[in-house]
Length: 349
Ligand code: GDP
Ligand code: MN
Image 1 (cartoon, rainbow, N blue to C red):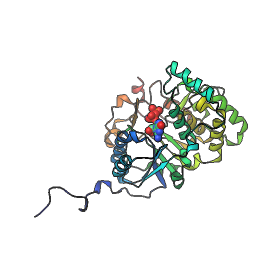
Image 2: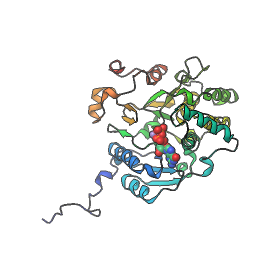
Image 3: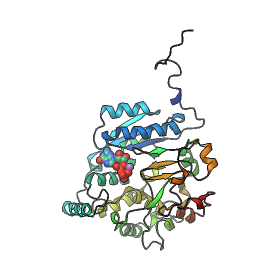
Image 4: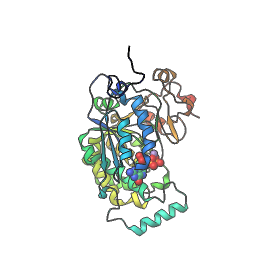
């Protein structure tokens, strides 16, 4: 008969690859991305992979946040790629600026000194605003207030395996508040006094410290010093209600008062990780082995050939960072008394 060569948008079946077919309930959850307009093509690649590997069957929303207004190109490109609803928010000035108690001269000297010592992002003001925003404000943006769970996605990431379950449901039904796929040691020069500030907080707020916490993951000497282990926060699936809790807000505000986001270069990864390590129960932190992930320069590729074949993974298992010396994931397994997956010893180096 008269079948056209190509479909057009009004034909039935045009968008079948973007119709949520996964059975089961949907959670009150969203993807969230902080980005600049100039990140559009790098975030486009990330979205495409998240959609292909997961969200085309689930159709979760996506919130984009920026310290400047998003332009039309950014909005058009991202909306065309996301199968759920998209929302675009501009960050309020107070959430992306120096608090009034910060000594500008002192902060400037730190940046000049770090630039000389070639510390990555050491000279950057915007990177510091970004880390402070991700530590203390993204979860209470007006657009985020409608949701209970988030999945953070950055530009230029890769997802290597199909994801055949809903990680938001894993969080919800398992009573999880924070999760990760990669962990490693932080660059000590950027967080010299973060643990001193943390100890001060612990002393002032013993009521916020969980009884069955993961102190053993972040300290090797019972809390005297920080061992620099942190969950890599460019990937996170977590509970927004936890981040909005009095415990977490008290922690953030205490750190913010101490000024280390500007007098040093505290990252949101150690901040979130220390908070999770001290204020959550062990059972509330989850490791997603099935979510195969890359953000320069590290890869999480699931251990176990059967898993990788079943999930149609395209990562090289040799690149899996989990069991290498600079990863903290082995420590996480030990602290939690978890059994490491078969074959982990072969991936140590
Ligand atoms: P890295 O992963 O630590 O190297 O840092 P990135 O450059 O990837 O920044 C982390 C996240 O913050 C990414 O999602 C970036 O798009 C975003 N980001 C970084 N700096 C800015 C900025 O100045 N403005 C906005 N809107 N987003 C930023
Ligand atoms: Mn990044």
